[in-house]
Image (cartoon, rainbow, N blue to C red; front, side, top):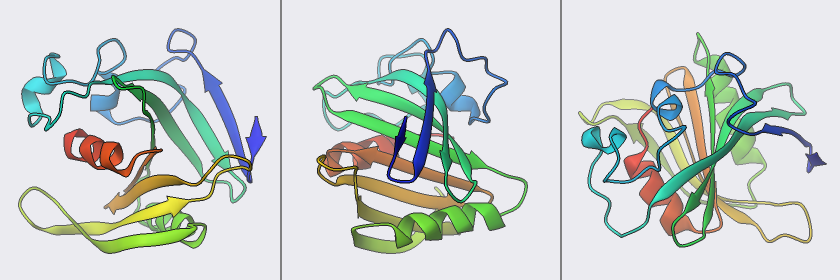
Length: 172
Protein backbone atom coordinates (compact mmCIF):
# COMPACT_ATOMS: atom_id res chain seq x y z
CA UNK A 1 0.00 0.00 0.00
CA UNK A 2 1.34 3.47 -0.80
CA UNK A 3 0.02 6.67 0.80
CA UNK A 4 1.45 10.12 1.30
CA UNK A 5 5.01 9.18 0.27
CA UNK A 6 5.07 6.13 2.54
CA UNK A 7 5.23 2.52 1.48
CA UNK A 8 3.61 0.17 3.96
CA UNK A 9 4.62 -3.47 4.13
CA UNK A 10 2.50 -5.36 6.63
CA UNK A 11 2.15 -8.95 7.67
CA UNK A 12 0.65 -10.88 10.53
CA UNK A 13 2.54 -11.92 13.64
CA UNK A 14 2.65 -15.50 12.41
CA UNK A 15 4.15 -14.64 9.02
CA UNK A 16 6.78 -12.20 10.26
CA UNK A 17 10.02 -13.70 11.50
CA UNK A 18 11.79 -11.85 14.28
CA UNK A 19 14.89 -11.48 12.14
CA UNK A 20 13.06 -9.57 9.39
CA UNK A 21 12.95 -6.27 11.26
CA UNK A 22 14.96 -4.60 13.98
CA UNK A 23 12.86 -4.14 17.05
CA UNK A 24 13.30 -3.26 20.70
CA UNK A 25 13.53 -6.34 22.91
CA UNK A 26 10.49 -5.44 25.00
CA UNK A 27 8.33 -5.05 21.90
CA UNK A 28 9.26 -8.58 20.86
CA UNK A 29 8.02 -9.79 24.25
CA UNK A 30 4.58 -8.34 23.57
CA UNK A 31 3.76 -10.57 20.60
CA UNK A 32 1.30 -12.77 22.42
CA UNK A 33 0.17 -10.71 25.41
CA UNK A 34 -1.69 -7.43 25.68
CA UNK A 35 0.22 -4.44 27.06
CA UNK A 36 -1.51 -4.08 30.42
CA UNK A 37 -0.77 -3.98 34.10
CA UNK A 38 -1.95 -7.60 34.40
CA UNK A 39 0.52 -9.09 31.91
CA UNK A 40 3.88 -10.65 32.72
CA UNK A 41 5.58 -7.78 30.88
CA UNK A 42 3.89 -5.24 33.11
CA UNK A 43 5.81 -6.30 36.22
CA UNK A 44 8.45 -3.78 35.09
CA UNK A 45 5.91 -1.19 33.93
CA UNK A 46 4.28 1.62 35.87
CA UNK A 47 0.58 1.24 36.66
CA UNK A 48 -1.76 2.56 33.99
CA UNK A 49 -3.83 5.57 34.98
CA UNK A 50 -6.97 4.26 33.26
CA UNK A 51 -8.50 0.91 32.50
CA UNK A 52 -7.16 0.89 28.95
CA UNK A 53 -5.34 -2.20 27.71
CA UNK A 54 -3.10 -2.00 24.61
CA UNK A 55 -3.19 -5.18 22.54
CA UNK A 56 -0.49 -5.63 19.86
CA UNK A 57 -1.49 -6.55 16.34
CA UNK A 58 0.17 -6.35 12.94
CA UNK A 59 3.93 -5.77 12.63
CA UNK A 60 6.07 -4.88 9.67
CA UNK A 61 8.25 -2.21 8.11
CA UNK A 62 7.49 1.18 6.63
CA UNK A 63 9.79 2.67 4.01
CA UNK A 64 9.71 6.43 3.62
CA UNK A 65 10.59 8.08 0.29
CA UNK A 66 13.88 9.25 1.82
CA UNK A 67 15.00 5.62 2.23
CA UNK A 68 14.61 5.40 6.01
CA UNK A 69 12.97 2.11 6.98
CA UNK A 70 11.14 1.94 10.29
CA UNK A 71 9.75 -1.09 12.06
CA UNK A 72 6.19 -0.75 13.30
CA UNK A 73 3.70 -2.46 15.58
CA UNK A 74 -0.01 -1.63 15.51
CA UNK A 75 -1.98 -1.69 18.75
CA UNK A 76 -5.66 -1.52 19.57
CA UNK A 77 -6.72 -0.09 22.91
CA UNK A 78 -9.48 -1.88 24.78
CA UNK A 79 -11.75 1.11 24.09
CA UNK A 80 -11.21 0.72 20.32
CA UNK A 81 -8.64 3.49 19.75
CA UNK A 82 -5.78 2.59 17.36
CA UNK A 83 -2.09 3.24 17.95
CA UNK A 84 0.97 2.61 15.84
CA UNK A 85 4.49 2.52 17.25
CA UNK A 86 7.33 3.20 14.81
CA UNK A 87 10.94 2.55 15.78
CA UNK A 88 14.38 2.87 14.28
CA UNK A 89 17.57 1.70 15.98
CA UNK A 90 20.92 2.38 14.34
CA UNK A 91 24.55 2.23 15.40
CA UNK A 92 24.88 6.01 15.28
CA UNK A 93 22.68 8.90 16.30
CA UNK A 94 22.65 10.67 12.91
CA UNK A 95 19.85 8.65 11.27
CA UNK A 96 17.63 8.88 14.37
CA UNK A 97 18.06 12.66 14.43
CA UNK A 98 17.38 12.82 10.67
CA UNK A 99 14.16 10.81 11.09
CA UNK A 100 13.06 13.10 13.94
CA UNK A 101 13.64 16.29 11.93
CA UNK A 102 11.96 14.87 8.83
CA UNK A 103 8.87 13.93 10.83
CA UNK A 104 8.84 17.43 12.33
CA UNK A 105 9.11 18.97 8.86
CA UNK A 106 6.09 16.99 7.65
CA UNK A 107 3.92 17.77 10.69
CA UNK A 108 0.73 19.73 10.09
CA UNK A 109 1.28 21.36 13.49
CA UNK A 110 3.94 21.09 16.22
CA UNK A 111 2.05 21.09 19.52
CA UNK A 112 5.12 21.04 21.77
CA UNK A 113 8.85 20.40 21.55
CA UNK A 114 11.33 19.73 24.36
CA UNK A 115 14.31 17.70 25.51
CA UNK A 116 13.80 13.97 26.04
CA UNK A 117 14.99 12.90 29.47
CA UNK A 118 15.61 9.44 30.85
CA UNK A 119 14.29 8.21 34.21
CA UNK A 120 17.28 9.82 35.97
CA UNK A 121 16.55 13.22 34.42
CA UNK A 122 19.48 13.17 31.97
CA UNK A 123 18.87 14.65 28.51
CA UNK A 124 19.05 11.80 25.98
CA UNK A 125 17.50 13.42 22.91
CA UNK A 126 14.62 15.50 21.59
CA UNK A 127 10.86 15.02 21.94
CA UNK A 128 7.83 16.57 20.23
CA UNK A 129 4.07 16.21 20.13
CA UNK A 130 2.74 16.85 16.63
CA UNK A 131 -0.38 16.72 14.55
CA UNK A 132 0.57 14.65 11.50
CA UNK A 133 -1.18 14.78 8.13
CA UNK A 134 -2.99 11.68 6.90
CA UNK A 135 -3.86 10.66 3.37
CA UNK A 136 -7.13 12.36 2.36
CA UNK A 137 -9.93 12.00 3.26
CA UNK A 138 -8.66 10.88 6.68
CA UNK A 139 -8.20 13.58 9.34
CA UNK A 140 -4.75 14.38 10.79
CA UNK A 141 -3.61 12.19 13.69
CA UNK A 142 -1.57 12.81 16.83
CA UNK A 143 2.03 11.65 17.15
CA UNK A 144 4.58 11.73 19.94
CA UNK A 145 8.10 11.52 18.48
CA UNK A 146 11.49 11.38 20.16
CA UNK A 147 15.11 10.38 19.89
CA UNK A 148 17.10 8.57 22.54
CA UNK A 149 20.69 8.32 21.36
CA UNK A 150 20.70 6.13 18.24
CA UNK A 151 16.98 5.34 18.45
CA UNK A 152 13.96 7.13 17.01
CA UNK A 153 10.43 6.40 18.23
CA UNK A 154 7.01 7.58 17.14
CA UNK A 155 3.65 6.77 18.68
CA UNK A 156 0.73 7.62 16.39
CA UNK A 157 -2.92 7.64 17.41
CA UNK A 158 -6.23 9.28 16.74
CA UNK A 159 -6.13 10.21 20.45
CA UNK A 160 -3.34 12.30 21.99
CA UNK A 161 -4.38 11.04 25.44
CA UNK A 162 -3.85 7.41 24.36
CA UNK A 163 -0.50 8.23 22.71
CA UNK A 164 0.73 9.93 25.89
CA UNK A 165 -0.47 7.06 28.09
CA UNK A 166 1.28 4.53 25.85
CA UNK A 167 4.48 6.63 25.91
CA UNK A 168 4.51 6.42 29.72
CA UNK A 169 4.19 2.61 29.55
CA UNK A 170 6.48 2.01 26.56
CA UNK A 171 9.85 0.41 27.31
CA UNK A 172 12.34 -0.07 24.53
